Structure formats: structure tokens, C-alpha cells
Image 1 (tube, rainbow, N blue to C red):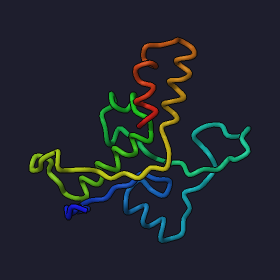
Image 2 (image 1 turned 180 degrees about the vertical axis):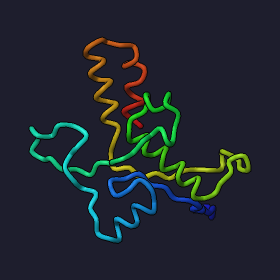
Image 3 (image 1 turned 90 degrees about the vertical axis):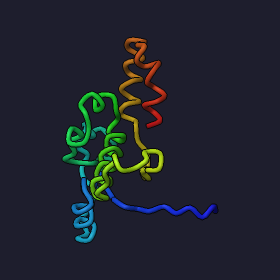
Image 4 (image 1 turned 135 degrees about the vertical axis):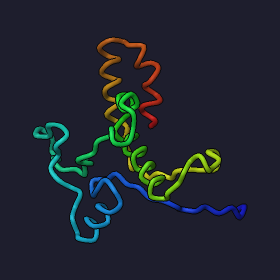
Length: 140
């Protein structure tokens, strides 16, 4: 270990338990569950019909619509949580070296909506879009 220190100055969260720290904390402490019936797609034919889905999230509150259309929800969640953390920390980016700031993000697994959409487009159209974006979107 080289002795460098890391300082956590702000927090943010987008999760099935809440889309900000206060809501997440309140739901966690009151014993509420983030698990419920799947609502994002028709799950009636699936064996499992419950999941932990993020609800009531509007990416337009956090990013430009041009970015939204090219990013998977998991990327949008991460960007939104990072913006919350920056706000929570009270940081003014103009006062800091951008190469000395970072965001630590925890994600279980994600990016499949973009991967599926691009795969379907690839099979249907053999689109140049798929060849150029498939790898980067599946790795977000």
C-alpha cells in the first residue's frame, strides 16, 4: 500500500429501495422491500414474476436527452447516482483537478437492455450501428 488516502465526500443511489439516499435509508430502516411484481415488461410467461426494479426514475433529471437514447438504464443509474454524490458533497468541479476526482460505483450486473436491442437490430438489419456500439454498450 502506498499510503495514499481516499476521502468519501458525497453519496448517491438509484435502486429498487429508493432513488436518493434519504428515501433508500427510510425504506431500509422501516423494513420495506424493493422486490415486487415485474412491471417493466410482460412476465406472465416466466416462471419468476418478481424482481427488484428501479421505479419512478426519470433520466432526463440527470442527463441530456441525446445521452439517454444511447445509454442503457444501468449506465443512466450510475450517472444519476454520481451526480447525486457530487451534489451531496457540495463540490464545485471548477475548483478541482478532474484527474484527481473519482466515482466508486457498485453494480451487480446490467447492460442487457442495450445489448438485446442492438442484437435484434443486428439480426434484422445488419446495421453499422450494431458493429460500432455492441461491445461498448455491453460493457457499460
